[in-house]
Image 1 (cartoon, one colour):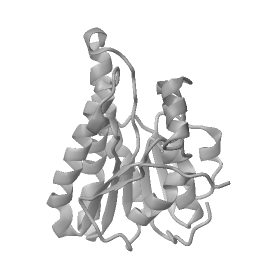
Image 2 (cartoon, rainbow, N blue to C red):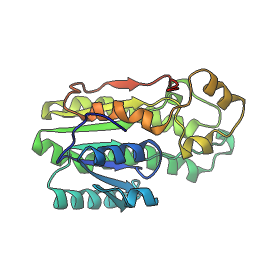
Image 3 (cartoon, rainbow, N blue to C red):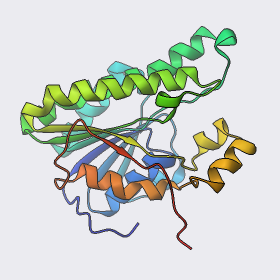
Image 4 (tube, helix red, strand yellow):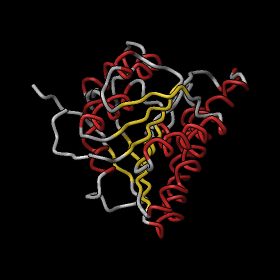
Length: 242
């Protein structure tokens, strides 16, 4: 992605940054001169081969593992300037038939993983009196969808958590914002939304964006130019570049 964003010397931690939006942001941040550390259970080749980008195999639902990884980042780089929480799972099942383990796993990754990541990085940001935290919300948290109750509930909780955390850490000059990325073509989206009338409707009306379409707004929110906190950036629609 071509942009004027300069992250030289800064350190970003991205959870779930091996695929989709997180991966696009991780690469762009590294290309802008920053150090990007991806925490994810998966490790695709493109992440391993990008200069300025490091991958750590971490399950964000494991609090001890998250803290150990963040301590390692600080030991190596001396700082953490930004955190982006993009790790998420999106199972589909009817509530009446939902496996309790599926429910717990969804909340453990989508909500607990956000909390543990914030707990791990905040002491370092507060000490530096500088930091930006981004969390991904979802329109499903507001409008709902059949067979998506666990995912929608977890994202609704993330929205509330972000608002409260933003108020809590604002005196320390740490910013917390959420992003509604819109309909984005990612492996997770394709798995949860197979080809059909609903997907065709999105393509014809709102458009289905790419992970790279979200990177620019994310880089802005991570930059010092974005002075807001407790805010939500919403990308309702994509547009054709042709």
